[in-house]
Length: 357
Image (tube, rainbow, N blue to C red; front, side, top):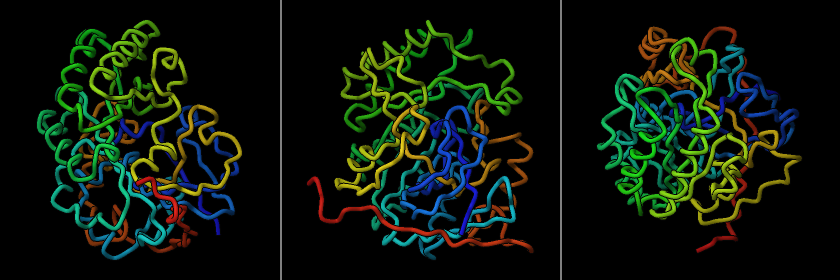
């Protein structure tokens, strides 16, 4: 049984999907340099870390669907590059070690957290200071920060991370502007998280089309912002982690090992994961994060952020959102003639004998 799996790179830039981690990959590739490439599933079993964050924002726009999928115990995932290929994943807590969310709006899920109790959880919440000109549909950031606090009170600070990304610099959003905004936000979120993940904007084809005035951030601005963020974060008990940015900020105190590492998940679970030894780094030595197979869908995120790599255009997003059926096992639409369905091989890596506390 084989499935072709695809992945984007920076989860904070887009906001919700499921990810199923792979044990064996024939060609792990580079997360940052090969976002549009395919990863062929190896012969190993899959670690079930179900994660939201790479193709759409499920907590914000599709929470009812998520709840239905959990109750029914499975989800169907259409391969975006070969749509006739469909993978069926079990959502049984027996094989799902952890659900790791990444969203710009956790509020719709807060009243349904009881559904998630059988699972370990890790949440990334992306909060930036941009306005409606860049993030037109993202809720007021003051409200998102209050919801972040509520979420942290439910799942604990070890299970919630803040993402301040992507960082872009232009005439309106200077390095000094970012540094001042970060200080205010870090003060507000202090005590509710121990991690802030940062990255600088990447000019992908979709970004170039939807945000033509965006420019890559130069070295001097990256250093100025990075050093200031590290200093400020330390003051508020927060560690800065860079996402797919290499190790240039490591000498100044940033953790450049990755943002979705085994260690991150183990701290959230308060337990050990018996992860099989990997052959080399899963992001081509960029960091220690685990690659995954996204079970969301591109062109479905209603936030319509201009820097988004996962949306082609607003019209297509709106059309796809109309096709969404909360009762369907597919995020968008349903089964089609000619679908070839593969049952994913799944196995928990949770070491139930080894708990930290």
